[in-house]
Image (cartoon, rainbow, N blue to C red; front, top):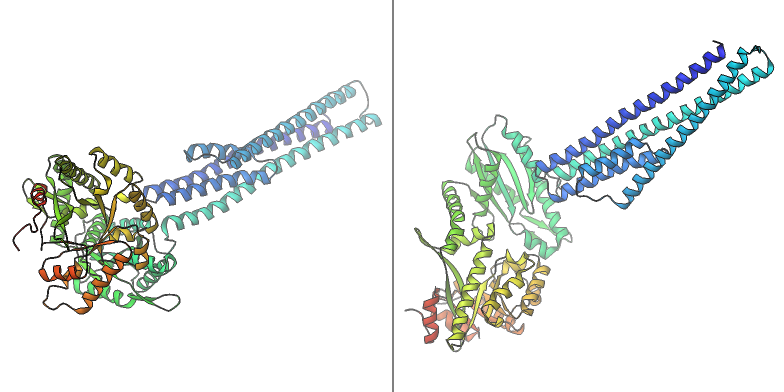
Length: 640
């Protein structure tokens, strides 16, 4: 074989080796990209398992899609749009982010990528095929010419050999360029993806594990840290569930920007006092969780009280006002090494929720009494549905009297639980539980039905009915079909809507005011009467009061507590009198709760309060007893 033949064969082999190398590189990079994206998807799955919120998961999915787009974009940058990346991104997107529709831009990128890549390889393959075919023909022709006896030194044959050699060099250069573009683009795509992956890892960690307002660990990270901590040998600890009790008031009065500033301030100041092996996190809203060293109850109490003292006041940015921050804390002492972190958090939360709230800083330790209460609550929760089916829940009515005529002008419906073995359970023992687990919805609807039955019987018997008020829990107000459900129940008994009054407590109205005003307007449009219950027990503002579509203002019984002495404070009288006048100016009727003495009744009558409710006239009584009282139009329900 001639030297020229060997050179051509060698170059052909090199071209084949280069193309095989390109295929191998493509395969390797395919596997690398697959691993990169799969690891990121595993990160998302771990976030789901550790309890990340829906918002966190969605943000991570968006980052996944960005990485997928990065693979595609990196390929587009390289002109040939590396096919493996396109197919990988397309398959990964379809399999890993289920239910998330591919955007039009993503679809276009995929189509451009695949079409361009296929077109490039088809064109390149056709070009190389034609060139190799022609070179092979020329090689055969050259061999035939040699075999026919033409001398290799013949000028025409030399020129023909040089032409073949130039063609081979062009094919070789084209193959090398094509391979370089493919490999170079793959490297660019790989580097681009790795950079984006590192950015995404940092972002995922920040989203999942770092609270954006305070910089503290999130609830998910806190839970993970606690689990790791509880796996190791440890000294006695205490878990503290801390809450800014008046945070809703701060947000309402000073705005959410200042509210976030307060959260950061509290987090920063407490963080400065912690030891290196103590944990601190924001677990949601105005709630914080801490795992602290424990020596004695007194030492821990002093430490928490020291926080209260140091960070209990903060100035607004304008320095015009000093805002008091009121805290409540629940403490669970972890003395048993078998206790798991979930129980520690739950018990501390129970202690915090049971702490007495008198608008002052409080600390409550979890003890056997709370443990018994918790067991009792669990038992009531278990028995509640069966009790409703067995008619253990009964409705009582407390009359409302006119101050001028001293006749019954209305009633408030109140729920009572006549337990089959424990007897009468006070509402304060079960209503908060039912509000927390949602069972209060069924109770409120049951009360409304019983009230409608009572009013319907009055109408059928020819007795002029009075308005009966029913309490609406905050749980109802976030039901988009609330008004329709209430109308359906009332209309089922053909009761006029203006005989039903719905009571909303002051604290409920204080939350998400705009939305609640919208709900109240719908109830008013349906013809129902609305009242604000427990006015004066919280943080009502006059600005809020004038915006509410309320018909009746019910003064909290706390106003009456100051009238138990023979000579009540003149300022208390002035406050109540002016509240009554203000309500009347706003076209509201006024009802005073908790009236128990003749002195209170006389003062309210002189102050032109419209209605009175309390033990001075009657305690809550059964519907049957109220019916007798109401039909008889008696002034008093019992001996004074």
